[in-house]
Every structure is written in structure tokens, then in C-alpha cells.
Image 1 (cartoon, rainbow, N blue to C red):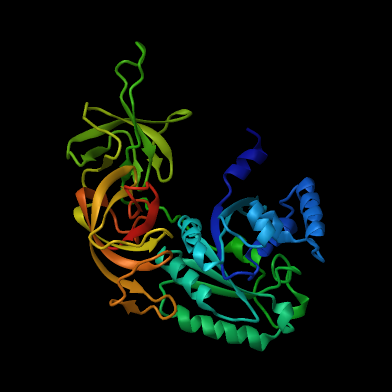
Image 2: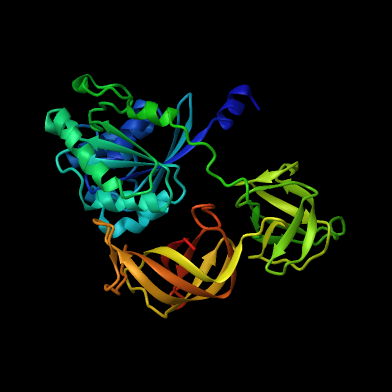
Length: 425
């Protein structure tokens, strides 16, 4: 492996999501970042130049770099979550470009679920609107610690400092009720490139850094939980060969903590105890495993373990309960949440049946008020529910561990994913 390749692999990775209303310029902003950071190929540029001419666009439409679906190009909107990868000399990035339409809020939840940082775009002409509040609340709910509010299309309000300050005030008033510890505000024009990669001469009143520099230098830290050791078993490996006839390994992805050979562990739900004999990845033995490594673990004792079980440290077990308090985002456009309804709950690698015991309240996205009288939970609604599972669930609260604190609900009749949830108690 060359030193250049090793240096690239060792670079810090930042996962971010973009959110905002329709036509706020999310895809254009990402296209500008890709173009100005020289992260697109010549043939890609030629393709979007041709597409822009066919559409009759006056300039090259940078949004076409991310709007890859035919329906997206035809309608000029983002429908699906588009993931784009690029790097600068300082950092690697994975961007999730999420839709702005209300009916695609579930896609925004998907894109934000793994993000370290959210960029919220606001059209300078319109200011803070319902989708701004919706996406900001979802970012807060998903424990995203950093939000950058980009007030876009400043060229259409004559680069007005007063208008920028007015929108900052609107947003701060709403955000004061959210749990987001770090919020930055940047005035930009994604179309023209002002304050995206280079500082803007049109807004010399803005003394902060441009967007790319802010992304490169934002301190994220390690947001994986390396304290609570959690290893959900995904697959039991039993090779059918004479050479490996005694081998029994448990494969999966570490969801938290650090595991080392010799560690005393407990298997849940059985409660059987053992020690880690060895840890292996695709290259061979490894001295330790931590989130989010995918490894195979072997134990010193033969224990009946199957998919859905969880290996944990003996002195630090997760919570175990059949009573779950959760916040959910409803995904289904075909059916609404049924109080006393039965669903399949998928948590890490484990599937259990569950009953919706109680719908406690819905959230009004604009005011953050609890709507206890409204009992209908439909597409994109966010609600708090009490669930009862058919078998104990082994979990941590989402605030402590994203992996072991999240789940999805599946409709048994259609096999559709109807909701995503986070465990709050």
C-alpha cells in the first residue's frame, strides 16, 4: 500500500446530510461543493452540460450531479436519498442529499440517521418555514450534534445583511426549544458559489468562514459509544470441512464498546457466560474490535448462540425489557398507525413481535406542542408510543447508543417498513 493511499484511508470521515424545503438549493449546493473541490470527472461535467442544454437551463445545472433518478431530472426535484463522496486534503466526506417535499420526510430520516452534521438550507426570500422546522426537529431528535444553517440565494435579496440577520433571529427563536448544542449560520449563493468554497466579495459584512472550511475544521470527535460493549450476532459460522470442524464463530458488526481476547462476556438473552477466545476480520486475527468494525468472534466455551443474540461485557449489560418507550416517524402512505396494532420490531439483528400499547401524543412540528387529542398517525407524522414486545429486547437509549437504541416497525401483512423509531425509555 502506497503512503498516499494509506494517508487517504487514515483521513477523518465526516458524514453529513442536507435538508430544507423544495427549491432551497440543496442539490445545487452539493453540486457546487463537488465542482469547486474538483471531485467530479470530466465526462460527468460534459453529461450535465448536455442535460442542462436539453432542459433549456441558462447555466450548467449543478443539481443534476446528485438528482440521478429520471423522475428527479424530469420534475426538477429530489425524490430519493442520494449519497455522494468527495475528499479534500483535510477530510473525507459522505453527503446524503435528502428530499425537500413533505411527502418524502421519511427519506430525510433515513439520510440523517447516520449523519454527524446537518446542513439546513433556507431560501433567503422565504425565511424559516414549516420544512425548516420539521427537518431541524428531526435532526435534533436523531441526536445530530452540529447544524450549519445556510441562508441560500442571498443574490436574490441583494446580499442584504439585514435580511440574513432577520432569518438568523427567526431560526434561533425556534431552535431554542431543540437539543442541538452547536449551530452555525452562513450566508451563501450555491448557484454562484459565494461563501461555499471561497469567501464572498459580495458579502464582506460576513466575517465567518465559508462552508467548506467550516466542514473541514468542524470537530466531530468519535460519536460511536466505546464504553458499552455490544455485539449483535448476525451469523453463526460453522465451516463444513475436516480442517475447520471444531470452528464455531459468531459474525456481526460491533455496535458499541471494545472487545479483546480474554474478555469475560455474557450472551443475551440466555445469560450464559464465557471468555473471548479470538477476534478475526477479513485479514486475520485482530487484537481488539470496536464500533463499527465487522468481525467474527470465537468463545472459549460452546454455547447455543443464534442470530439476534447479543454478546456483552459481564459487568456492563444493556437494559432488558418488554416495555419500550419510543419516538417514531411513520413511513407508510397506505396505512396509519393502529393503536393496539401488532407489528414486527427489528432491532439490530433481532426480530420480535410487538404490540402498540399506547399512542401517547403526536408532535406539532411548527410549535413542538404535544397533540394528545389527535389519534391519527399518518405518513411523516412523529409520535411517542409505548410498545410491548413478545420477548425481552436488549437495548440502550438512543441518546447513549444509536445502534442499540433504534429500530424499525414492519407490517406483517405487507412486509413493508412502516416506521422508524428511537428508544427513549
